[in-house]
Image (cartoon, rainbow, N blue to C red; front, side):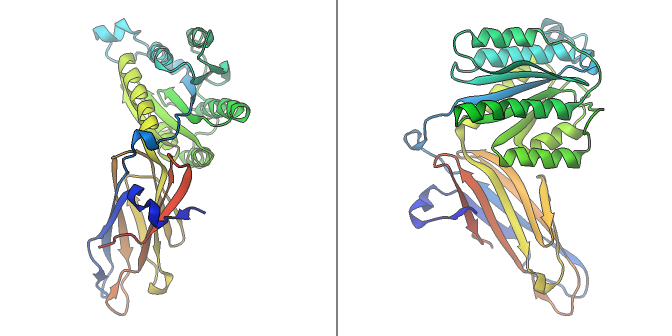
Length: 342
């Protein structure tokens, strides 16, 4: 259970405000209202931040047959410069990431098709580790069909093995794929459930869609429910840029696992609520939207639509709003209830 915010911490809380476009609704017909929740993450001085933890990153690369197709415009000079197939682009991007990480970071290299290969188990980049990672990436070749779920979970397993041995790390799985999963678990709902479970264990998932026509069906679900980001990039140098930008944001994060929960009182009759733009979990009259992580000074806005049935009298919309998050600087979970609703 997250802690309620003590008074002495109020200067370090996020700025959160909720706006309802109408307090009362007509009784004679079905109607709707909108609730907008605006969150701004707090700035934290460098002196107040804990020592930076090593990054425990699993690079999971799609090596199925479709990755042998062209990554972008075959006539593009940059496309040929970095390798014009999708697998070439993914391998070049992975190489660029390895070259930019710190010696204290840890990397696993996994590829998947209809099978999964661990090319390198979790390895520190210190000493000869970086060269071993680069060699592992070089060994990846295309083969077979696409069991994205199996490859992704193997990457998460590598992270867990290292974390159990070494203690605290910043844990992230990064999947590079054209998204055309056709074996194993492919249903978005099942992938979403698993991704949420990993996120709750502190393992976040981000994805990069490779190629001009990659499929978002599974890649978007993994990232949205996994607390990470989904990126699109056509060229290898673009892939490196978006990955490094996200990893930089991870270091600047002050709020993680941000969730906004809307609860509608049962006494007033059934009110349906949905959220726009973020993955949601609905249980009876409780709607929870997952907003992921936020860097200091970052802002997220979410809109809930409330569908209110007609009733015997004009009534006020009965709802409670709360926000929970993990303070990454202090390592504690916090909650604000019924904040500034207007």
